[in-house]
Length: 339
Image (cartoon, rainbow, N blue to C red; front, side, top):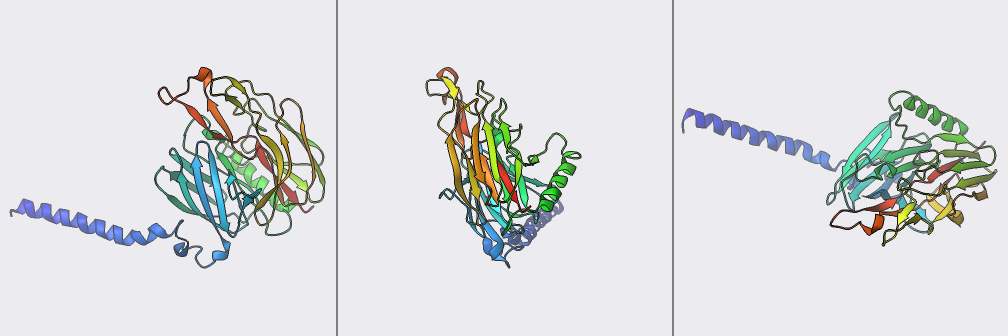
């Protein structure tokens, strides 16, 4: 073996040893987040505050199942759509998969932390998310383009109090926090929806895209505990492909969606969601809901995905292409304060 070969062998051995050191040194870190609850280093000593959160992402919704510190049920079903419920200081032990294409889970709480995870078909993504200590709504979204409705794939982490109701001071603090972010680094990209205080009947109208206030989710409404709330929801008649409530039949005929319900749903302290009022969707006229604010929070609007199939003249197929998926847009939350 000549001198050159010895140098080559030494270099190869050095690289092998370096890889071995890196693997041995980092392997334990692979299991510090998600999926393996017993080894989640920041939360393993306080399992009572861990919410095991299974997220299945698809075009264009997040399907969520929670257990542990929160056992969320929506009208008896363990699946929530674009919604995660938690208490202040909880941990979300996230296990995420994709049912179809590459997607993303992006949680931009710029006052605390930013979570940004790629979700790839066939792989499992893990992460741990510390729930903010400040009660209120926090948006999470799909940061990966996965089709024309990807901007509608936006959900809400709803942080509710352990007991009682939201405080006016916490909502004010969150509003100021959002305002600061939206007038500096997030100009034109607000993420968290606007927060509106309600002292009487309120009317929300969808725009040409099928959204309330041009945002997903729609405005967060704030009402007082025990008050009677009147909410009028007006769905403008869809007349173009820009509106997710404008759908095509198998034969390619377009028409507004009619087989969905609009409603008010109570969110209770343990994460259970129960229907308060449900009505079939109508267009162009107010759908009026009147209820007493007794739960700590509510969800309003169309809270389950609508199947959208772009199929003009019956031309959508596997050969020339197709665009279809589950879409949510016209929904939002209501927070109930103690005064």
